[in-house]
Every structure is written in C-alpha cells, then in structure tokens.
View 1 (spheres, rainbow, N blue to C red):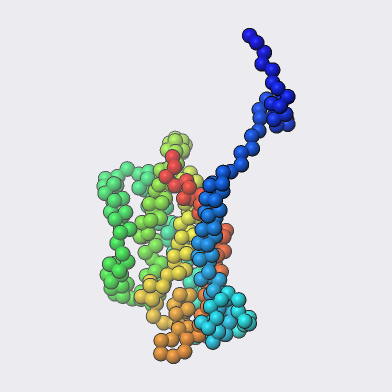
View 2 (cartoon, rainbow, N blue to C red):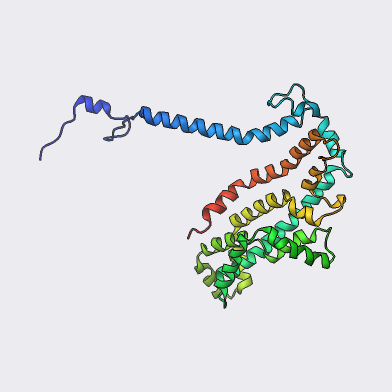
Length: 305
C-alpha cells in the first residue's frame, strides 16, 4: 500500500479544528438569490395587505368622524381619543356590560365543548359498540349541513320551551357535542395515543371513566387547547346566532352591540364603533397570543401515531 501525501494547498483549504474534513463555502446562485428575493417581497406585500384593514381601523378609531373616510392613509392629521370615551357609554348600557355577556357566553360554550366533545371522542376512539362507524359517519355528515338548514327547527324548539332571549339556546347545544369538527379532532388525537396505556390501566383495575380522566385526558392537552381557542374565537365573533335568539339590548353580546352604532336612517357613529371594535379585539389577541403554541402542537400531533 502507498501513502497519499496531501499538498500544502489542500492542507490550507481545510477548516481549522475539523481534522481531515474540509469546509466549502458555496455562494448562492444568482437565480436562486433572485427567487428568494421575489418570494420575500411577495410575502411582505401579502402581509401588509392582510394587516392594512386592521391598522386602518385602529387609526380610524383615533380620528374624528368627518376625517375617517376623507383621509384613507394610515397617518392621521390628529389623534383623538374621545371616540373611546364616547363609545364606552354611547349605548343603553356601558360597553363593559356587553363584554360581560360575551364572556359568559364564551365560557359556557368552551366548557360545553371540552366536556361533551372529549367524552364523545373517547367513545368513538376506544369503545366498541354496534353502529359505531355509522354513527361516526353521520356525525361527519353534519359538517356539510349549513346552519340555515337547522336554524328554523331549532328556533321553533327553543321558542316552545321559552328559552328565546336567553343564553341557553347558544350554550346548551355545546353540552350535546353538536360541534362535529372538535369531536373529529379529538378522535384523531386519541387514536394516536398508544392503547398499551389503556391496557396497563385496565390491569390496575381502572374502568373507562378512570382511564379517560387519569390517562387519556392529561395527554389531550394540545387538542383541548385547540378546541378552547377556536370555540372562543367563533363564539366571541358570533353575530348570526346572537341576532336570532337575543332580542333585548341588555342581553346583547359584543357583535350586536357594535351593530347598534350604525343607524340606517340616522347618523352613524363610525369613530365610536371602530374604537369599540379595537377594544373587542383585545381578548381575541390575548387568547391567540398565549395559546398559539398549543394550537400548533394540537394540529401537528393530530392523527400522528
């Protein structure tokens, strides 16, 4: 065998501290650099286009009413915080009253979805009973039904029970696992949990309820967080359901309260409406800010075995 001698030029090309391995710095090609630049420019432009309406609403909440539509730029001529003071007390009740109504509605719906959907998902994922696949398919078919198909019979039912103009028609269905999307999400998540954990708990004498509450439920935190965030966002912004079932102003939620600032026959207080819209977005922003990592984890781990 012969020994191979490396030249001084090859030795100098080696990276320091890497032994026999060499480091080669490859500069990006001009075409690749152009593609990356165009991609980033397009993404930045799309981000600005999506954020612009929100920024315009925030800036408009600081303008007088006569300057809101006269100056469409994001640089107001003068900052005016009176819209927040006027909007907070402009309606029949302080705006905090409507925020409290929405909070009660959202909390009730969140608790209902977490309890009912998790139990239903455990039954579909772990229990074996006759007609399970058929029931699961029927549940998924309800996702294709628009709300306008079921709103009339639901309204007749709740009207006959005397629950119209209360929160019950909006909260009670959540305790019956009517949101098939969250049931499907949790079913896929539970199917990704190893069944050996159930078998080990069953050997220790646990029944289905103890297995669910002590084994499955603690592992479902990402799916539960995803359900909480989406339920909060959907119910906080729900206008159609509140408009159907809530009739008196003292029971209005935030979307119905914001609608009261607009008058089709008289003057509309756009500045106050934009100001209270900004206030109503703060809870959504905080919930999404603190729960986004659970949201991403919940979607990333759903269905992965």
